[in-house]
Image 1 (cartoon, each protein chain N blue to C red):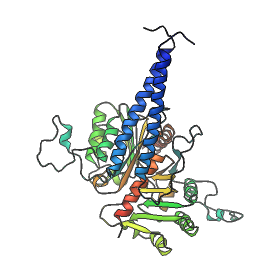
Image 2 (image 1 turned 45 degrees about the vertical axis):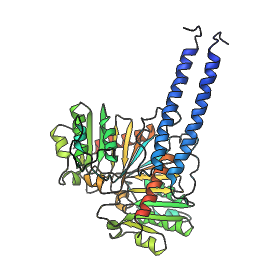
Image 3 (image 1 turned 180 degrees about the horizontal axis):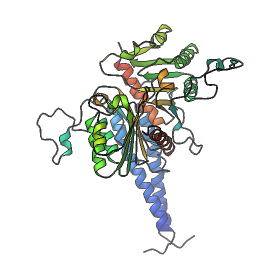
Length: 226
Length: 226
């Protein structure tokens, strides 16, 4: 087309910036509408910001619990839920956002969580394992033996699990997804934490933060070797 | 300098659009921060640290526990510790870093923590109260009644405390310092969490994150009004 050699790349860069900015405006407008509507939690997660686009604070989103309802499992099926008076949530909740982040894992998932008893979460972990995602789990021995613990299910399918066997607690509640997203906060992976407690999960993409948590994970993984 | 006749106007148009979009993003971000800030009494957040100084991601630092020792209290006295075989820590630890962040409060300290029994931490809070820092504490009723809870000390000196009295837990472990730094993670404010457990605290200065947690604090503060 034109005879200008330097324009195409420049144009591409600028139009990319325009597209990014438009997406950001759109997202902020939605967030503002939600904030003004009295929404208790933060707006839906944006895509993880690409470094250097001016919006990269490393915070992807913050989730607060309790949710008013557990998510409806029929919503995962084709056609969704057809029950006329279903008591479960059909709209996004903090838990469904949390599950969406976990389910986005494609290669690695490192889990370091004190208590794991929530079947909605464990089902996602088991599904990722079936898809070939390499999963490692660190937990606490006291909690792994409590009723409803999903640790045995993980072990049964071959997911490696290591435990703190000291009288003190392995009290972290974090997970690292593909080495690029960190979920961390007060939230144990239990049903009570979803619909009962006041809890938080911060979803972070900051590389330094993830590196610090990955180092900590690797250190505990070695320390809890049998 | 090239011979492309069509570029300049096109470029101008695009760069104008970029400038407009940037202005719109800026305006929306301010509106969103304001919408999330809730209480009018809150101090305005200071500017986020300037990009490029190594703290531009909003992550100030990450603290991991357990510490091998509790900090030596003599180190706070002039001349430091003179005990020949003192068993306490004289060097910086995760706890002393944590205390330094708390002690930096000059105006406001909002505390939202499940269990508070650690006297090193409570002493800093009481000291800040004496210096006129405006403190608010949200905690859980189950934990406030446990042996060693420092909640009664706070109440005795007039620090306002509100509690979740439901059977579920107010399970957060966060604090907001002067509306500009957030401490958050798995770490309850107990002695066992310092020298026994595996725990984390992330220290963050990201304005969006702090705004979300401040909104959550204000919401719980109202919800737990007697």
